[in-house]
Amino acid sequence: MSKKAIFLDRDGVLVDNSQHYYIWETDQLTLVDGAIGNLKILTQKGFQLFIVSNQGGISRGLYSKDDILKLHAALIQELSANQIEITEIAFCPHHPEVEKCLCRKPDSLMIDKLIAKYQISKPDSYLIGDSRSDMDAAKKAGIKGIQIIPNQNMFPHLSFLNK
Image 1: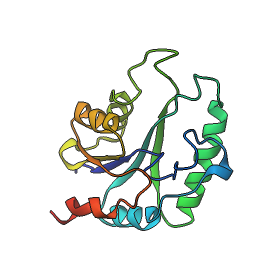
Image 2: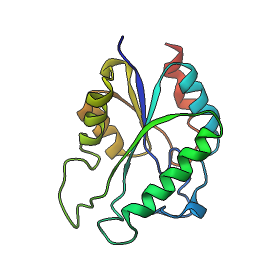
Image 3: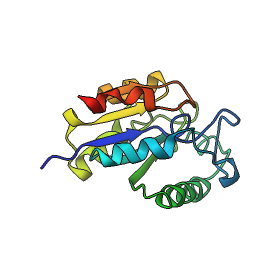
């Protein structure tokens, strides 16, 4: 049986980044309005949930990989407390001003690896993001992209669930 998935950008889609461009401290962790309810709906519709996030602040020396792992642990804990399971969080620590890579969105290596690892069905999967680079990454990975307004409830964009 093929598995369907939702790949979610972190900042601006799940985590409100209207006050901070880079988010790495747990006290900066505020979920976007409606995130819990929307993730529950996606889970009930049978989607595996993944987070794919560019974290270029690591290579720029603004924060460490450990800072991001702590933040992700707090995010997983908050979502788990609401019966939401994130299968895996993938992040790119690179920044194009510092180093080149294939994992940073708009490239699709983060998504490609997750699709292969979890045997995800591309035709049944989506990336929900708030930027052009998210949409480009979805296209390169061969999945559908849904662009939302940053830091807004994604619910109006979930009409694909009714198909």
